[in-house]
Image 1 (spheres, rainbow, N blue to C red):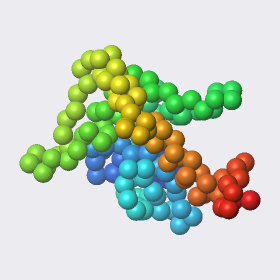
Image 2: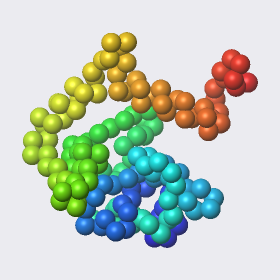
Image 3: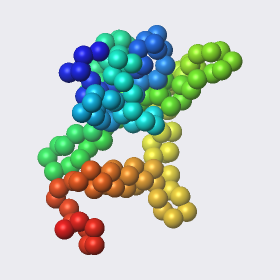
Length: 158
């Protein structure tokens, strides 16, 4: 894989999993070229990856940004294609030691599955937290840890 294709936000698979396996989003690429993935601990050498779009089978509505700035709003948009693709190729497609391969996940009713996922995103813990609140909290903390501009925190940031 060429370094110009391997950048933050890129969708990649491990090169040996081109016929299946999960797709990962690149979180960062270090100056030495090592790659950090959003759902894996540690850093990996760039030669281990194939760009997921180069593998094929990823709808265009999935490979475009799922998060964008529209006017003053940060918008998270999960299209039906993106939901189906994430469901069939992401965290649910875990490795089966019995089959020595990744489990096949099939979304056969996207509309019904979409409502189930919406319900899951809106669920509240006893303290009122939702998965969306927790995701936003995590992003806020990460941005501050990276030295984000435009924010001051008493006793922490000027």
